[in-house]
Image 1 (cartoon, rainbow, N blue to C red):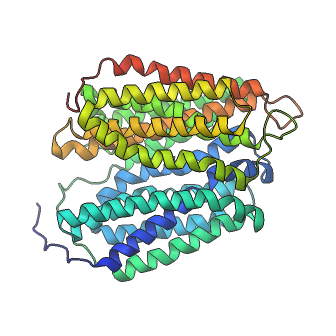
Image 2: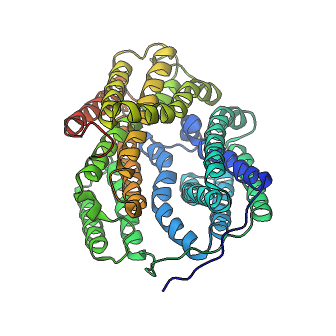
Image 3: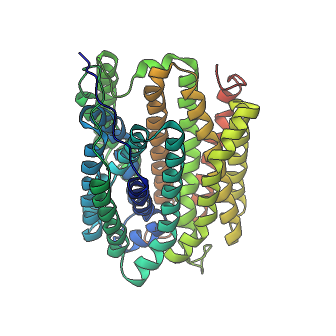
Length: 465
């Protein structure tokens, strides 16, 4: 039985500012690994496949936490859940800062993944406490500050890691997150729980999906190393199949599934998920391979770039990604989602093939990475818009949640596969992959991206199908 709750009290600029500070600090904390991944691999003696695993665990955790966070926010109030999730993030940041080895650092990144679920709740808080017009402005400001924080983290991580240590590059933004969380706790009024349908949280589905994703990452990341141990590899594959089958069975029977797989039978949703997966596989190749290529010693075929220089070289890609959302929104309204996605796929394929063919100058990598980042933003924004507008209002969260999970799986698969390619392409006794391994990674990503055109051609021209 549902009950009527009093409206949430209005908030002032100070409370919105606290949410903005939280967005900046979490954006900075989330972004420090990418430009410093080669440095972390050297200091912690990681293989390329292990480095790939480190770069994705935060996103995998976020995909699992996000749907649960929404339901907890409905049940207990958004502020309470945000503060508790950020406490987990702060603990993860401190674990990452103090980590002496890779397993501990992975644990820290897993805990930090809670931030992915906390940020959407902050948008819900804004909508609960502000009128519609003001809430749109506030959400835009908070979103922009998160992007700005991510850019700041990308630029600052290298200088901090090289000037102080890798420990401080996690510690400093974590201290900022702690301060911002305290401000949110003090300045943001409590919002009342919202009416729910009485359905509980799908804990079995969460556990089985977690097992599926973790086992998938192990198979992709360790597959090359386990070729000599076929029984171990076969065991992991069987375990993956068992987790995946169990998850599908549980989700199909759950009263309130974490991921409603029945949505995939709707053409608009199913096609969006397939496209998102293929596009994110392509994107992940550039995201992972370009920093690695920057860091290859200059006396071979690379540039010997430091973590500071890598962060600077990645900045144009971050700027392109921040512009892609608005551009895609305008394009969808004027030209339709199919035109925008087609343009994005072609642009990404060109960028990836360009990286495979020409990577002897720094500007080759900078331009190629920026093209891929822009194309990814165009496509993913168009897919989310198309999905959200093709289902009933009450199904929007479920449908877009499917796209989110598919995006993370696609990114994780792409990163792990390219990491495995670099590991397999590293000569015995060397820590430097062969140049051909990078070329193979970019070409494979371009081929997967091009496959998405087969799905795009079946889409309707407009936003709604």
